[in-house]
Image 1 (cartoon, rainbow, N blue to C red):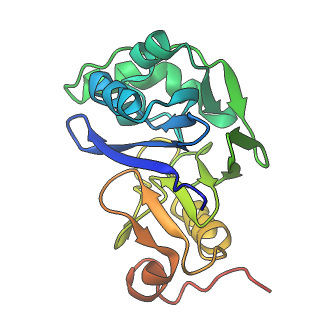
Image 2: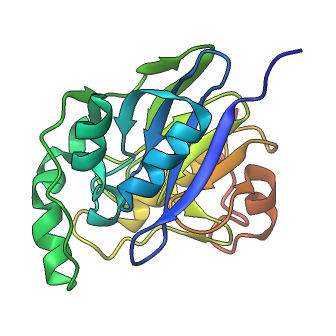
Length: 217
């Protein structure tokens, strides 16, 4: 029998940004995705599952998704991977957090860049990098077997903001139609905030997606 993968959703920081620990339990390898804050909590989850971290990965560089990166990188020695279009926002993250009255540990420079079509591997698991702009210009989603980590592109019943620097509604709408609604309806979506959902559920009930259609032939 194939062992189920490790998948832990960890709400972090002052606005409950979801960090995900996802990995192959049998191989003992995995990723930390969007470590927004609370590095000690994330590290404890990793220890509990006995996972070696292949990489610390972010979907985009808003401050609430990167606050724990520096500490976790020091603790794990894992490389920090950043979407190629998010490096400037990464460098501005700590300053932008302060403008919101929040202090975060300034994230380090990336060890590598994520590009459209890249495939990340941890044991038997794979995640495909898909460029998904609109909330931010360089935002990516990470698509695996039956699931996708979608950052702030889409939520249960809502979608990401487009009123922040670099946001654009028309671009996000195109992403929703061509990158989200083209996934199978039973794909589980793990967003940056709130509960998991599915493509099918959002297609039928999300007011931003209903009637949007998709780009399948």
